[in-house]
Image 1 (cartoon, rainbow, N blue to C red):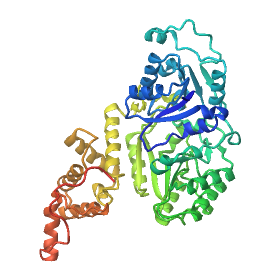
Image 2: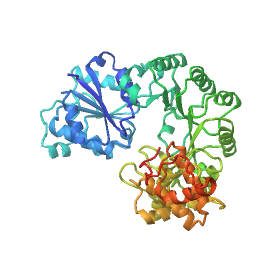
Image 3: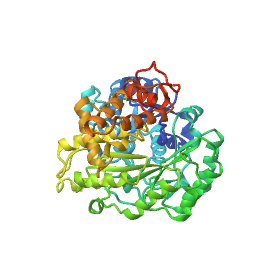
Image 4: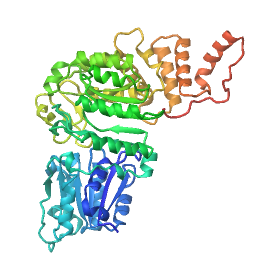
Length: 533
């Protein structure tokens, strides 16, 4: 049985906990006394507690994030009721700030704030060689019926700050991806940590200075992963193209070894793409590289207010170049609810971004992440956030609650229609012959919600039929134009069964153009498959 269990609740099974592997890799002599146990947020907390306690550990280390803090709180509560002697150590961004107000912190024995790669090993060594964790606060101890008055005084404080480690001090974790990870899960990698910018809504702005993994060591680990069959690499660096020499070296490394099906995801600074880097990017085959581009706002006054520096002219030139001269898949982000950003200002930014034609536009709702200085605007801009994760904005001085709700639905429907890949040709019809894609998609969004009164569990067939009806009846577009675009979109995904609501239109057109002959389409299916690509 291991003495230490490292665990977290991932958002989905396909996500692999990168942080746990860093902790494991740097445990030194304790590594052989430790195991990793991963779960996801769809599993019942009591079942997770059962699985963890089955290891009979002395220490459980949990990674806490905005997406898992609620169910993990239930897990810790169950563990402490059943086995109050087990030492619970928390770490991760969600418990690195504002620890005094969190119930999960009250229940834990220790919390390591910051990057715990080295500090976790130090704490465990102390606890396993004679020290003892702190006890829960008195209120919680009484609640669970374990006063534990005979427990020795803790050898360590409850809240333990971890200094930022240099990469020269760290063992890299890539050997800890096992064969199941390689075959079935997203493989995360990093060439740097931190961000030089000070955007007030982002935790990465607090991680200074930016630290680089020594390039030879990093590329050596990437070669090992390639040798093991890894074909998809997701870089978690916040500013991949900050150090241009390093960025180019990494891109050239993968380009030289590229095979069909390989895929690389990077987060990039949108206004920093010099010619030397462009030359390498342009050589990658279409669809093999994805850039996640944080635009967030085009409003310079809003950018200044949240300490975000961005050259919008360079950003636009770079995105246009990526779309016109490369096969890079561009995923661009905009945020609803920033202090000083009105609906009209956000809409103008959305329209500006649509004109740059990224393959995906992620419309995000502003979140108040613990520790970020965005809170300094709360009074002036009357910022009101949800008290529960993910702490999204509910309203502010410029956008009332009901409008935020409409924009939240806008974002969800944009994912289903604009980002899904199922309506590549049909989506632009929503705003065809109009000046504002934002206003027209918002109109469609509000019409759709009036029909469905929901934003989830919408079958693709139902969504497609409603979109076709909207474009014909509300937008007044020609039936043949809409049906033709939708049928081509439908076939683009490799499907050939003709959906019922398109049959009369498509077959009628075919009869006119082929004299009644059909071209191999199946008549029997009346519905499109459920889901998205």
